[in-house]
Length: 209
Image (cartoon, rainbow, N blue to C red; front, side, top):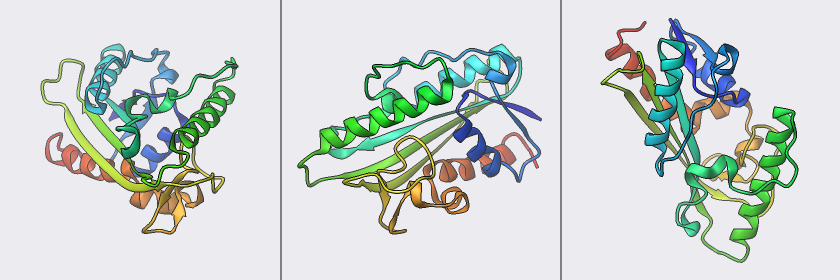
């Protein structure tokens, strides 16, 4: 079964390919099918994930899955939340997608540290909401959510991962997410928790094996 991922983020693709390996699925990005990105106008992860999944499913005329995820910081009233990927303005926009993503990540991290400067409450969590649809008009979307409790470090640590990973410290592991190898991340992350729920739903509802 082909499942279109409503994202062009190579980090998300790699993580989800590993997490969905137990199922007989061919996960492809919407960009590889020349499908443009959907608007994400909503205030919640689940609403945006549904919008992205429906957009990809309609354009691909088949099944699609979307992940809307982000960082929720308690001291900032839940920010950056659904705008995590574009939390900070970026002065220089590169035409190279990956270079632009790196610039955006650096700006996001810098703004997060600035907003938390001097604050003692640095509790946060990564949230991932996955929505899967058999087709664009599927009345029964599969919805799974994972939460990864953390604190925000005072300074970046680690070289792996993407986004806010170098600032997100997982106390239970004694490391930031960027210090974890892929196996450890895929075993414990917010996306891993959501993916395990989604695997169960796909087996139970879609009868995939």
